[in-house]
Amino acid sequence: MTFTQRLKTDFTTITLTLIPIAIVLNIVVGQIASALGLPLFLDSIGTVLAALLAGPWVGGLTGLLTNLVWGLISSPTAAAFAPVAMTIGLVAGLLARLGLFRHWWQALISGAIIAIALSFVAVPIRIYLFGGVTGSGADFLTAYLLAVGQSLFGSVIVTVITSNLLDKIITALLAWVIVRALSKRFVTRFPRATAVVGE
Image 1 (cartoon, rainbow, N blue to C red):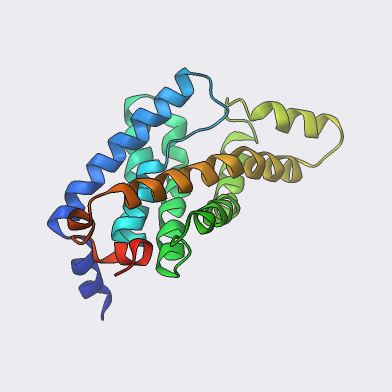
Image 2: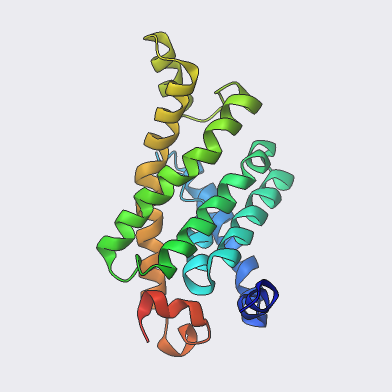
């Protein structure tokens, strides 16, 4: 199958309907988590959900558009991290394709892998665009590590992984639960979802 054919297969009418729903889910749940002061972001549930249902390209686009929209409506910082959100969707979709979202415990492992993978994109953005500080609660850990003599790079990478690890594990598990809870009739409209729910 060529790249163009794969895109046509992935971006069907129902998939194009799913993307804005997933974006709204990301923003609404992320804003609620922020307003409640939770130590989690929970702003990529829709991205992972889209990836599980429709594949890595759809997941990646959902993540990218989420942060660009979020950047326009409330937080310019979010737009800078759009490549990170895209990475979350791509990696989640690839892990699902490899069969690593079949069971709940695989979803937990996949969440940890996503957290590590996104750090390769997030760390350079955080360092080179923001000097290691983005105004989030995780900045306290960066400041502490710098104060005890760690390098900026080391401080930021520890901060990014630790602040994302639990969040992405819970996000992956929640997305898995949602997919498994959807009706079989609905899920069969997404061929990629068979990697999660089976044939």
